[in-house]
Image 1 (spheres, rainbow, N blue to C red):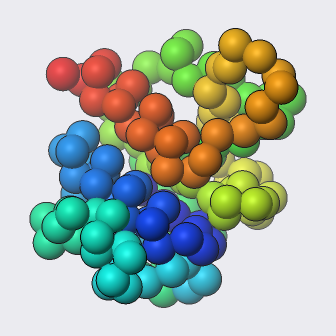
Image 2 (image 1 turned 90 degrees about the vertical axis):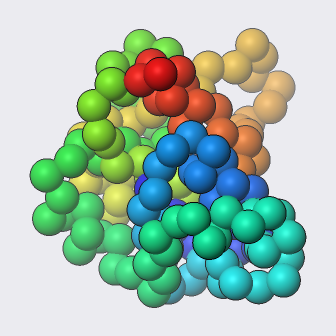
Length: 145
């Protein structure tokens, strides 16, 4: 999982907890992410940090460029595909972005697939990043369980 510029340590901890709960192990965080070891992130993660391989201060663009694994970026672009139409039974590299800006355009451009989470109404622009990560990662877990 790639986390780009996630600012809220509570979101970081919640995302790490979901990653651990869905059986994933590797997490790469950009230099502008909140620390996974801050007190708030540790509380929200409920110890998930200790079961994961965490890589902080990572150049996510370089990592995505050299990856042989398909890169999925959560975005509301016109090219986005519904999460529920994707085959997630193989390894993928999930990308989740900043609370206010989402995934950067540079990472979106490198993504193999643009993913959106369908909503019942358009009165809500988007989901919280931790919620979006949970929905996506649990859909992948469901498909592979």
